Length: 116
Image (cartoon, rainbow, N blue to C red; front, side, top):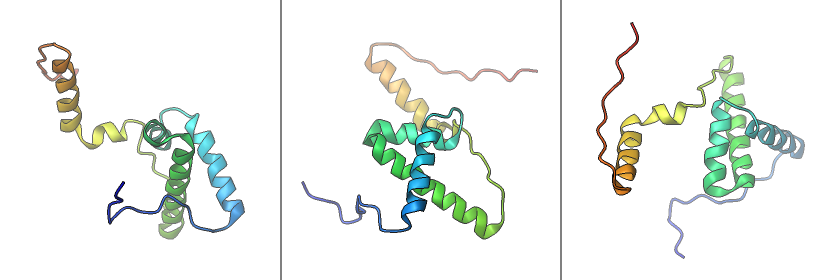
């Protein structure tokens, strides 16, 4: 199997072992929470790559978030569990429309009017 040139290593680098343990333990806890960005990230990664790699990815994301919070002296801003759904709405509409049409359904989409 040929590895793409821009592929990154799957190994994590050496660092503070206590920080790594704390972040991975926190990542396991985040995987059990609901309605948070990090939980959505964990479940999305675990579905594709597996639980352990998802924990490492969430731990890395948490480290990046903490770094930026400390650097810019900002509070944590929760993006929400639906962040990835809001990221590319047209892709999601087209994806699920094609899946339903593939199952033999005729699909028409019309927006729901906003409540007055």
